[in-house]
Length: 206
Image 1 (cartoon, rainbow, N blue to C red):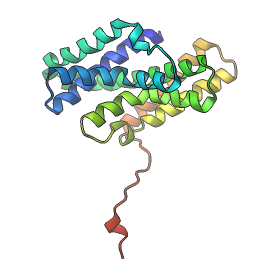
Image 2: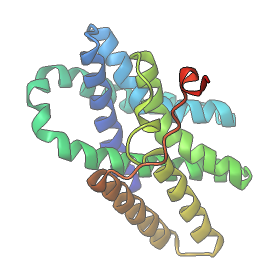
Image 3: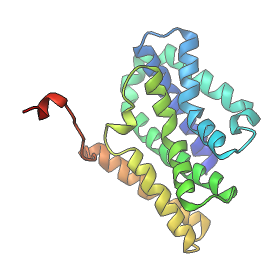
Image 4: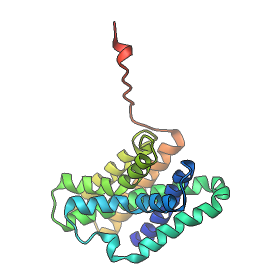
């Protein structure tokens, strides 16, 4: 199940990256490149940091074809994308959670300590979006909108906690995925967010 969700997620993330590139008036190469980084950047950064070689997508060329095709296809169907906004929010949320759990499993398989496992999950979940926004010249959306990075953090903690208590792997996956999706959907619905730090030197001048 996680593999199917992963494929859906990287497709949705690639399309998200393509739309962001379109807002910056990029050419076809730019669109494809941003789509690729958005979909597979998080896993790439994770593998490099953990020393997990070869990098995952280099062993699965289908991932490359899929995300680049999805990015370029977005250029054709962009006029209809506003009608699919709600669907994209759900798919993006599913992707965040799937990426997080996959990232945790990669680090667990390499016998890293718990804090590193959690960071591995979060990096896999959010770093593609960070790369997308930085290259497109905007503050990363995952750090300033409704609960997003914090959802990844909580999913990773829940997943590891249930595993520590020897929960059945399928039950752990279902519980962690469901809890994360409900939290993300609730955050979108009611616009839950963390407190914002706003600093302006002029504000504190006497």
